[in-house]
Length: 380
Image (cartoon, helix red, strand yellow):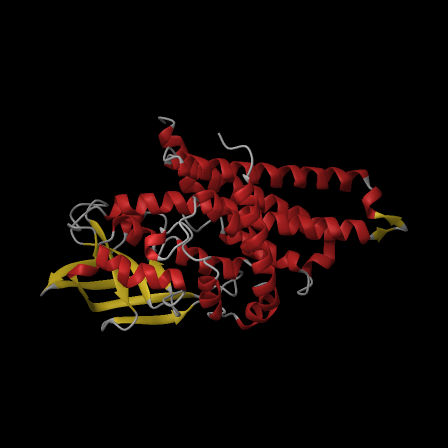
């Protein structure tokens, strides 16, 4: 059972914290204001071996465990959620299906350069009429010549305008709901693929998000992930299980940042001539926030430990995501309440944490979906 990080993981935590503070912190305000992703970070993190952390060394990756991946995501999202989103997709949703289910040719063509930051990946599942219901997508892939022809639309796609390739979910057999899906790798320059528009959001401003179209987009057979038609849903479930645990780490990172900011604010602020830190009500709130962050962290790393042991269920992953994302909402809201009007100022990062945190309840399966998954695995 997981209790504490080992010495190697603690050293890794110190290393990534130093790198992210050096490379990411100076960019946050600029790229949040511009609403773009600093694409140069892919090469920087590639050189530092911080992309696709669970990718084996034979494909150029560091071959680390899920706990280490969560350490990295917590530290990165403590600094910036938007930038953290692009890096998360690169090392998870975009490449995990290739790593676990792709052919050797797919791995050498896309996984290896993604590890080095030479190619940027995206993951295209969500559609205008199909979000958390992965089986409800309408994008289809019909056999054509030596490959498949894709038609459909995808939306809310992270890295959508900057990616070199994307892992796309489509039906090869629409008569088999869910089980008739497959995953394909589509390249940015494939005829028939286009970016409809870049999307503007309430939060996560530095995360690149887009709406995509596939209009008779021809994809060669070797770029279908898996050896036969069908099986895409099972591939998605394994990928989403990992991703939901990652969201625990992302939530914990934002919660830690919010807690650090509000603690600093309380220590230096006076109200009615008295230090705010002397207020018993304020001290109780901070004690609760500190407790919540620690429980979030333990819940996340317990889930990561179970994942590394190969015994984590979808219920375990959903518990991590549901608990941590819901806890985060309470933490950032209390941080805003304690700061009152000061929290609304654009130069105050607390307002960014509040905006960024809201998205976590929707992506990788809504909170409602997590409730359903947990209830189903309880036999309800």
